[in-house]
Amino acid sequence: MSVAAACGPAAAPGPSAVPGTPAPATPAPKTKISVGFGIALGNPSNPFAWIGKELGYFDEENIDPDIISTSGNTAQADAMLASNQLDVGIFGLDPILRAVIAGSPFPAQSVFNVQSKVQYELFTVGTNPKVKTYADFKGKKVAVAEIGGTADPYLTEALKIAGLTLKDVTEVATGIGVPMGEALRRGDADVGISTRGQIGPVETTGTYNLTFLPRPPFFDSIISGNMVARSDLNPAKEAALKGYMRAYAKAIVFTKTNPEAAIRANWKMFPEAKPKGVADDVALKAAVTTNTNYMSYIDKLEGKWGFMPTEKMTAYVKFLGLDSPKLGDISKYWTNKYIDFANNFDENKVKEQARNYKP
Image (cartoon, rainbow, N blue to C red; front, side):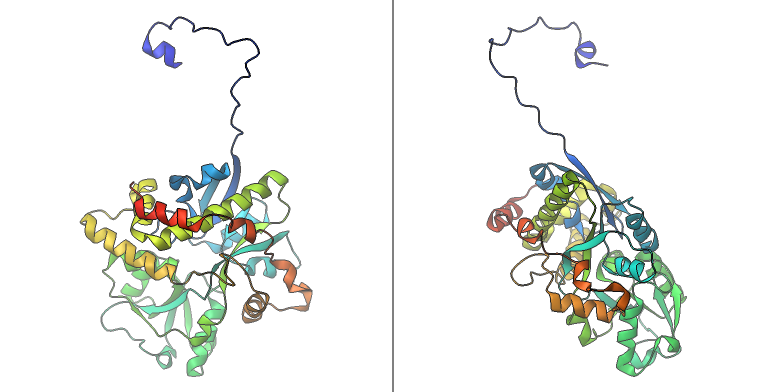
């Protein structure tokens, strides 16, 4: 139904345009780009991936990102990127490398580094956990998102502290977030390993008596958690990728400057993510704490958001155990060619916006 029909008789036509006057320019349609995300949208750890819509950054880049959550199903996310159902994925480089080694390569590269250090953490729930040190892992059950998944290399490295291997523990697939927290609370597993972003929903509730084990020193020596993208994007999609990366970098600056504003923007977009039955100030404080803890893993490298130093990326690949001869020159699996574009904005202007933001 037209607006005129809904509001009554049509108004008399206005005066004709002056001959020779150009018609107003029609805005170019926004370019759509699909972005895969591993955990639930609206979570308090990662709002910078989508609040660019609320903050006007997507409009500035003339893009319309379709951000798709696979809710921790990393196998699904990997398959979607490999089958060209996703243009971009924020879940790491390893699926690209594993596909090459398995003989089923697909055209994709890492284009932006998210974390400047490993964000995996080992943790327990409850007031009297069975695991308090790495020596306690022997014979215990470890909650993981999936058996044989991306957590395994990190768990392997952590177990080395006590001279243990994966054979000394039993992995239990629990999923991520609250399902993992509940599995630990029930006693289905004794200790969990997950990313800080995935742990966020457990941490935010404040009811699990969460305790983090000491971080293995190695976890601070490499980078992980890359944004990856198809390398066969058409020119319009490639431009949209660059625009999304810049919006993403801006939102990181916004979030680091004023995490409370980022959480409020997040809740405006995803009101269902705001905890129910909890006082607003309590919910906000918990969400800000979770967000601040997560953002501590993110920083510039060599003065730029998202930059991937060759030595750190090489160490990352070797750590994953994926430095196979089948890969050839591993540097072809990441590129910094979009990083200058992604960093080409006025950080002070973004910080001012963050300080003055009102939802």
